[in-house]
Image 1 (cartoon, rainbow, N blue to C red):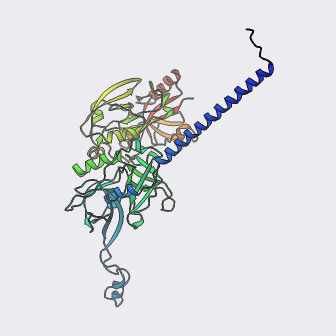
Image 2: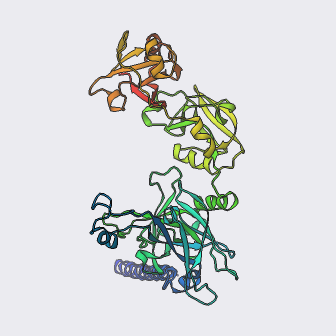
Image 3: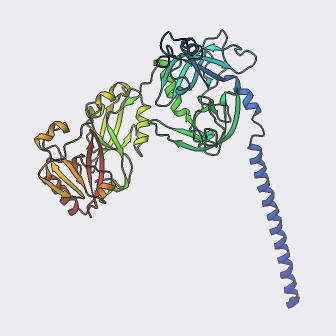
Length: 498
């Protein structure tokens, strides 16, 4: 049978039919995708809380109002206003304040155990002579104000632990993981407390940022836009599981009211503090026994074996755990107890959260090589002030035998400067003058500073300094690392050689 031929018009018709079919498939696919996206959006919308009422009802019995009172000594009489025995004396006694008075303050807190332990901020109860607790109204809750005993405080984290006695178990809440999946930036949170003394109040928002610092040594704040005002201090910040992930502590505000920037100390910090306050009535933080500073970008070129600006550089090692372990000034701590150290803040927090007496493996970078050490931690609260005493003396600037290098006029230590410096002659160079507009001035060096090391080698005189500069230049380095001491406090500074 002879095959039929396909004419050109038939080919065109077939092509049009295929195009139409393809368009229908594409349209169907687009509709399917749209329905899928709509399903995802609906699912996300369902994950958003339609109400916080159930959560608030669940956790509110554990939240408390805290009232404190402090005795303020009054005036003994109208002294200096009218003479004693004057007919006007009774008038001034009547309207004047001749005896002690009381000032009151309000704050918030929350119960963490059935036997009555309560967490709040230290600044809520600081200096108080009396502390009273008011519970959220409800069945089984104490209806009267209960006196509270102060168990312990930690000003460093602004946390305080109280205790009340009651005949029946109290409703309480538990701490959650402030670093867990329900504590991410963007997650919902709810704050409870006693804002502006108005009584129990609830506010909701999201976590705006993590790991905020307000210039405290152990700061690890959660930032939230949930409304926090005066009186909320010490109250809990809850995740959606009803666990406490923060203690509301501070706000950033130009007018004293909430503008959506509030800070809660993370439970990762608070739980450790509370455990110690409950056990000891005070904190017992680990202590490494060194002065440290951050490694800056301009230091990297001047340090052998360091490829990026990270770690904590040791500037001073007094008698203590670090010295016993063999740590020296100039070491860069890169690994502490198995944790890679990014900066000094991280190291301080990890050390502070470590138990006193713990043996900790430490890795340091020293003159281009990694060195393994084992440190037995001391206790910061009892050792730090003894290891780093105050030293306010500054060196005498009028010394002979000076030289000008790297934007500074430097002098060796003469015998008449030994007493004011507290060091022996040959222990470094004194900065007599800093050239205006120089890098040394930009880096904050001042007349009177003492330079004890250059290129991580000790200096005994000007010849040593000149040799360190020459060595660094021959090695192709762009900067030289100096160890500078001011009022006894050391820090490293990198100055350019070009």
